[in-house]
Image 1: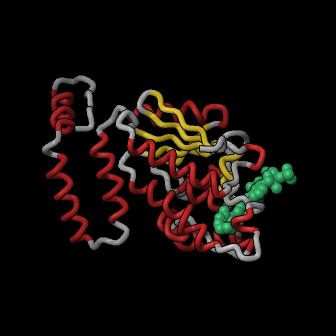
Image 2: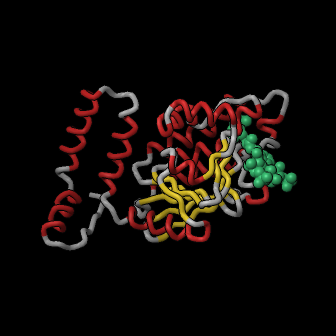
Image 3: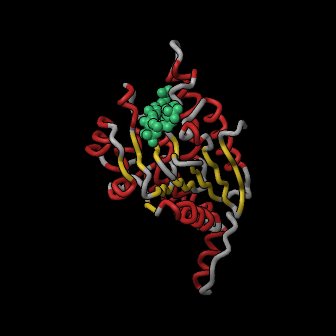
Length: 260
Ligand code: T3D
């Protein structure tokens, strides 16, 4: 890894920070490679039960670094960049069974906004804003933006946000259902850290199944979804964590989930 991503594991939480503050954490190819590596490391490490993704400095991420040779050369192939770098990150974020909390500490623009929205629980600092900056440079929202936005906020708002490219403030994003919650700027990391640590103590098998089921609902019929719920519930009903959850409820104590 170069030094544009930081990765730390503590209390069952892998904290990944985009760390190129002098460029508002805009992505270079190497940084994208390292972000994918960090997500895969978090997935593979049994000690990690939740992921916290954030940015260093005043921004979350300004999207693709527009000065990077991968996008600024005459023969730049933006499709290849998406295929090789951005798309695997989005898919990995959705496929990792561990919950991903995103703490949007400042502006999130372009692919930076859409990678934030690929998380499971998105918390934003009150001063943060989300900008679909793409159309301003003759591009479409990528990194899953055209998939996520209409699902989150409905097509009227998604189209307005994408066509106009205007900043959507944190409070507005919450009101529209784009994100989970807003915290005061100086409290964001405490709130996000507490949430990630709480999730890390939780029933991780159920969390993974919840992520899969919610995503599957985008393409399943009701019939198919009911079948999926039945199959998942059958499997979860045989888990140690299910037995522990029920026992703890009956005994009025805090459950001790193990992920088995
Ligand atoms: O290859 C492809 O294009 C395919 C993939 C596309 C994915 C994408 O993400 S496309 C969208 C790329 N992102 C943008 O278009 C956003 C560009 N940035 C901005 O609009 C603004 O910087 C912000 C709204 C994010 C923040 O504005 P502000 O006023 O708070 O800060 P600033 O002064 O504009 O930026 C601070 C510095 O960061 C500045 O450098 P300087 O003047 O101090 O030397 C600025 O140029 C630099 N910076 C900000 N964003 C980028 C960037 N440098 C390179 N690439 C950036 N995306």
